[in-house]
Length: 346
Image (tube, rainbow, N blue to C red):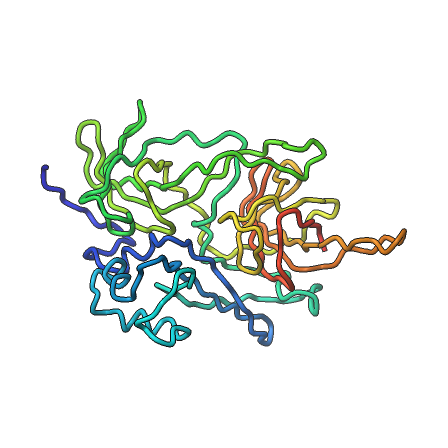
């Protein structure tokens, strides 16, 4: 194979294939979580993101360190991240082990807050560090501009820093330095809560990471995975780099007459809560826009013939709005959410 010269652009870090690069492709996708500390004039949101592995039969910390950190000798570091493991020589199937964690904090300016005493997020701005990782549901799926056909040295997990080979779609042209977004079509999304049961809402586009083209050779592109949010596989698609605003999101009031439902959680969980990314069955065509804030309600069963009012169980912030659907962040949950939860303006 011809030698590859990698041009590292702005925001890229040259690294060896070490454990950190592999962790971003762990078997269980991370879930961002956040908590708040009230301050004069605003609130500081502390957030954390982690990547986890579910223990399988035969797993040991020694073997997992070799698999994910590429050195079995660093198993004590993995043990230190998991204080619930009493004996490092005994781990059991079904246990969840933290492989990697990142923490940070963001300050939210709250000049006036009509939701004070209800939920912690109100007028002002909100910065969500995982925005470029959020997927979306779109009626007509995105036309891919290429797909990954192989990874250099065939690693078990494709992650940050790995070299991949891309087959462009017919008519697509690329040059060295092009930035691409890696994504996967997770299939159709059906709304079981619509008046017409089985209404097709669109296709779930899962964002996996970003790559940069380093060489264009005939019918194949050579690229390096710049960032990876979830496990990347041979066969995954490419789209033009998905540039999203990196500044704070202006918080807006929700549309008063909106009545939407949560129809899917990003990772397919049936029970979820604060920090989860969810998809709603309403979008721009219904007045939804980035930054709008909504309250989630749970229906309370009637007592005999007496209808009881729904109960507020949390709050959502619209991150992205498609024509018929929207991607939202659960900023606060008082109890567990499930699909089908009603979403309305406060």
